[in-house]
Length: 272
Ligand code: ATR
Image 1 (tube, helix red, strand yellow):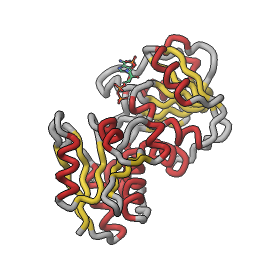
Image 2 (cartoon, protein in one colour; image 1 turned 135 degrees about the vertical axis):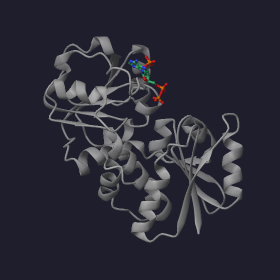
Image 3 (cartoon, protein in one colour; image 1 turned 60 degrees about the horizontal axis):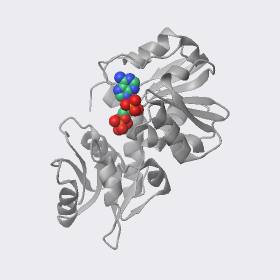
Image 4 (cartoon, protein in one colour; image 1 turned 180 degrees about the vertical axis):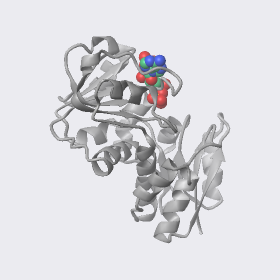
């Protein structure tokens, strides 16, 4: 039986063990998937002990994604750009490969699960921290016309846009969003579930535009409410992305693509 785990701090509420257990049941893969609470000052040692004890791969969550990037002996290109790693895989030679499946998880949830057609759209990405950065390459590969990164601290959005150096990408402050209307607005700020939605002018959402919040909870988030109150055609939370990023990690480790729809539905109904 191959061993996997999710590692973070805190970790008790992670849904990853239930999601991967469901994937393993469905695909018949023989694996166990645990959760590991790593001390804040010993992420690397905790990873090494897990590998030494037979661990084959790890999902990495807050606050260790940057540490996992640094620990990786090699990185997938999308993880290289992200500056953060959420999936570690043990290579046959004993080295660790880092990848980041968050962005592809977001794009699959939008495009495959919900039918959003990315080609030719204008996208607004709110936030310029680690979560936002992890999405950039997969979002650009989905072929939008324009991607604007808007952040409370404008300088961080400018810096991230410069780092990507793609003609479709620009950065600005949240307070500079007074012209363009966007087809999709993604909330990747850490403003929090109990907080309000980031302050945005009303015209920033195009008629028939979509909104996507990276976080999720039982009822709609403040950002989903913001979108719905301004006529969003669709307002999604991050539950589908959570399952899709897990499915991509499962594929990296096992070479099998589990069906995600039943797992999303089970989580949504509280049955997982
Ligand atoms: P994460 O890993 O979740 O991205 P982070 O790297 O600390 O966390 O980035 C947090 C992001 O949320 C930043 O873009 C931050 O804006 P600043 O760069 O101006 O700090 C944004 N953010 C946090 N709280 C916010 C709030 N109340 N309103 C708007 N943006 C907020």
